[in-house]
Image (cartoon, rainbow, N blue to C red):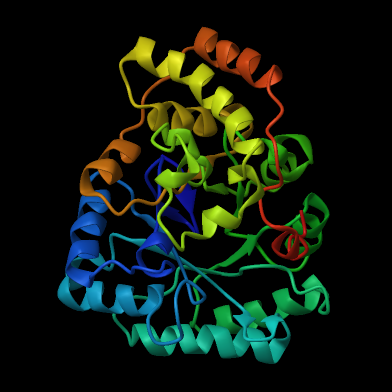
Length: 328
C-alpha cells in the first residue's frame, strides 16, 4: 500500500474537481453519496482545489459540508488541496501562498486538516525556493501537513526537494499522456522517493470509451475547447481508444480499469516509487469501478505498449493559453 505524507492510501485516489468546476455543479447530497462510495472502495486520497469553482462554492465548501455531516471520515481521508491561483493568475509569492492556505483553512473551519497543499501551477515570477520556504513556515505553524508540487518539471522537483521534503508530485499521466515517463519527471520522483499522483488518468473521460463524438460532451463543457477533442484530432485519437478496447474486452473489464491499472504499473516498485491515479466521477458505480484495481499481466502490458507505439496522440493537452502556465 503506498503512503502519502506518511499516511497509507489506496492504490487509487479520488479527484473532486468535477463536482464544483462545471457549468452544472453536483448537488451536495448527490456528491456525498459518490464520495462515500469512493472512500468505501478504498480511494482515500482526495484531491480538490481552491480554484475548482467560485470563491463561494469550490472544493473546500463541498468538503466542509461533507465532513460536517460525516466527521468520522475526517481521519480516514488524506486530503490534498491545490491553490495559489487568483484573479490575476498564479501567485506563489510568500503573501500569495499564505493567503491561499489560510483561506482554505478558514473555509474548512476545523472539519478537516489539509494533509498536502500545492500551488496549482508554478509562478514563474517567484523562485520555487522562495515558495517552498513559505510552505515550510506554514507547515511549522500546523496549517498544512505536507508540501506538494503540481505540473512541474524534473528540474523544479530537484530544486524544490533541496529546500523541503516533497509529499507528492501531481502531473498528468495516462495512456494518452505518457510525458512524465519520457521527460524525467517520473525518474526524479523515484530518485527522491516522492509518490507521483496521476491526474486525468482517463484522459478527461476519453479513455473510458464512452465519448464517441464531440456531441457526447455537454454544452459548456471545457473539454469542447481542448485541442484533443477538436475535429480532426478527435477521430484519430478515437482509434487509440478502439485499439485499447480490445484488451479490456478480452479481460471482460472496463476500459477505464485497464487505463488505471496501466498507470499504476508504470511505477518501479523495486526502487520504491509509486503512482497513484486520481480519477474523478459523479457516479457512485463509476467511482467504485475506478477504485477496483485489476491486474495486467506482463504480456498485456507489452501489448499495450505495442499499441501506444503505433499511435501519435493528436493535439496538446490544453489550449495554448493554459499550456503556457505549465512548467513541464
